[in-house]
Image 1 (cartoon, rainbow, N blue to C red):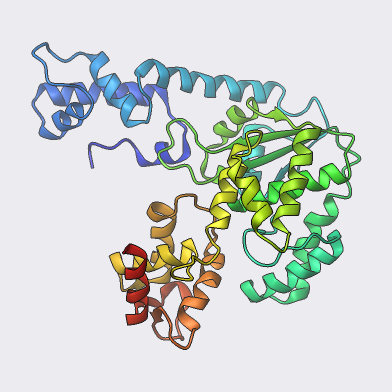
Image 2 (image 1 turned 120 degrees about the vertical axis):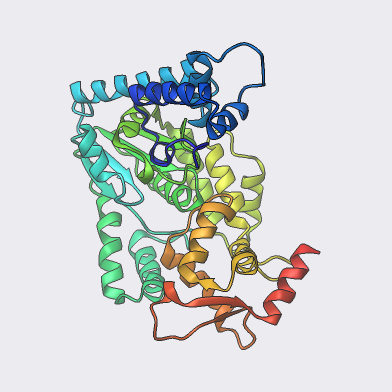
Amino acid sequence: MSSLPRRDATSHGRFNLEQQRKRAKELLKAARTDDPAALARILRHILPRETPLKLADTQLVIARECGFSSWPKLKSHIEALDFSRRKIAERGDRDMATLHIRCGSDIEYSLRTVGFEGDFLEFSDPFCIGPLCDLPPEELMRLRASFLAKVSGMAERDALARLRKGYEALEELEGYERLVLWFEHDSYDQLILAYLLHRLHENPPRARVELVAVESVPGVARFIGLGQLAPDLLAWLWHQRRPVEAPLLKLGTQVWQALTADDPEPLKALAVTGMPPLPMMGRALVRYLQERPAVDTGLGLTERLTLEIVHDHGPLPVGKAFSYLMREYEPLPYLGDLMFWWLLQPLICEPEPLLAISETHREWPHRQLALTERGLTALSTVTC
């Protein structure tokens, strides 16, 4: 649609100033020829008036389409991105022996691209699903590997080997002067962050610890994760990192102990505080608790949203349902596709399932989901 900005820019957050100037000039030229699409775009952001349109007017429209309140704010943000990239190229993380820690490999290449040279550690045990216990690392690894093997279909020894790389690396931090934790706002990231803070609290490193915590990025229409961002954005975020002191590490231990408690009340008590030192974690804990079965339907939030998606758009393939969940329905996206498939199993495998699924010879993303009568009843209970 002509009324929308470039989709890629509002997804990855990198805007080119000259390109945006050109778009503003093109919009002004089209408006002066009374092009209906151009006029409609302008009227979304500027009230009708008698005075002729100027370039400053269409620059304002372009800025707002890009997610900024004014052209100067868009210009300032682009200049800040350019400045950040130059600084990384000049110095980056080379002033200290640095380890970048992330709950996935999604930004490793981008960090290298923009000029970071420190080591990279992926610690990606998805604590947002499956059993959690406050166990020594070796025992926790084995518990989690057993569960993850069931979810992924891989052999348990392979799941354990993948986990071991991350867990054992946390025992070998002596050679670093700086640890940088790169995390976003969802429960996948924040529960892993809680565990890492807990481990660093239990065994304080000699390195300084810093945190890059992100829940929104200027100009990004729907921020889901760091992996969607252009490399320049990581350089910009680097300059916004903050130190992690002992109180924050201690808070990580409090969260981990609440997560692994037999009773959900300690976690609820923490979540209700909003956790001012780590507000993203507070919101992630609220979302995590919403996966507990609701009193009226027995459904967690993901299960309920999936029923709504199939009701609104189905029958449809599992992969398409996952796409709708991530793009439109989920208030705090955190699931990977395999995790989503695992969460669907109770809905499709019960003796009286809530969802019907098509033939089993196709790969699961292509199998069709449809509501059963029981699923429709469950959904009507939610909406009453």
